[in-house]
Structures are given as C-alpha cells and as structure tokens.
Image 1: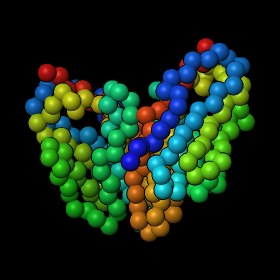
Image 2: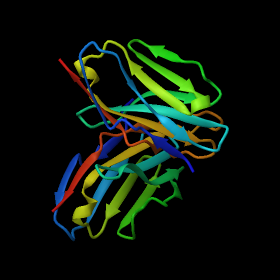
Image 3: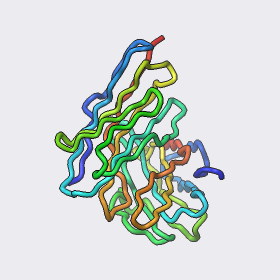
Length: 116
Length: 114
C-alpha cells in the first residue's frame, strides 16, 4: 500500500501569492494531520481531521491559513497571501485511529515551501 | 500541560560507539503513549517505536533499545554499535488518551562519524 502522498515536494513562490499544498492519506485511515517544521519552532501541529471533519485547528497560525478535507482521500492546506515567515517544511500524516487502540502516525515526505 | 523535552540538541560520536538519546515527558494523565521517530537527511519522518504508559518493559530491536521509566518520566533510546546510517534527527513524542495529536520534543541531531 502506498504511504501518505504529498504534492508538490518543493514550492517556491513570491510573497503575496496563494499556495496550496496537497495530501492523500493512507487508504482507510480516519485521521489526517497537518504539521509544520521550522528550525525555530520544531514540529508543530497545525490542524487535524477525523473522518473529514476538522477537530482541532488551534495550531493554525492565522486567518491566512486554511485547510479542507473534501473527502477521505484528499486534503489541502492553503496559505493566502503567503509571507516569507511561512517558509517551512509542511508534513501531512495519517492515523488508523481505531477506538481503544493507539496507533502511530504515518508521515508523508513533506513539502518544502520557500516564500521569497 | 503535555510537554516533551529532549535536552540534547546535538550528539556526535564515532562509528561503533553506543549512544543514548534522552527523552523526558510531562503529563498529568495516567494513560498516555510515547513514540520515537527518526528523520534522516532525506527529510521524511520514520516511525520507530510506540509504548503505552502501562507497559514499562524495555524493548530491543536489533541495535536499538528503549528504556521506559515512569518513575522518572523518561523514555530513552539507545543505539548500540552505531553506524553512519544512524545519522539523523530523532524525535520523541507524547500522545495522551482521548487525543489523537502528538506533542513532539525539539529533536536530537545525531551524527555518526566514520
């Protein structure tokens, strides 16, 4: 089975532009997570979904960030307008989420975003 | 509050040495889960191990071993006879029951020199 798929792998854009990151979780996984990794802040959770419903978006930095999960096999993280401080590696992860069983999260390869 | 501390920012050893990566966590929950992930230079995050708070048995997997001690709130990771391929950033993470999100430590960058 394919792992978590993210696209694009690298994105370079100019300040003010809209950026859309995409994720396809592992089939059958009920939970999807978006993380951001920077040198200063490490790995931080932005938002996560359960069965396509956002559960916790407290980590979303500000209104410029939005995330959607229109179906079980696809999610997007959008930044509009982008700023240089948004430069980071963005990871998507998924989790089987069986009740009463703790599971590991499987991470995608990440999208390296550079905002000039 | 849930918190994970990896006090060692960077470790550098010579190949074949043993090395231990420390992880100390804070939680008020009695049921929680601990994880270790590896991030090699290629950038992906690779799951290594998970442990629940009721299972204090140490675990060994090849050259890797994990020591979980609730009394000191620690979940340390030891690599025996280290190899250059072990060079990576290693993250310890905590998840408490009822929540799906992981709280990560800051990571320890391990460099194994030939």
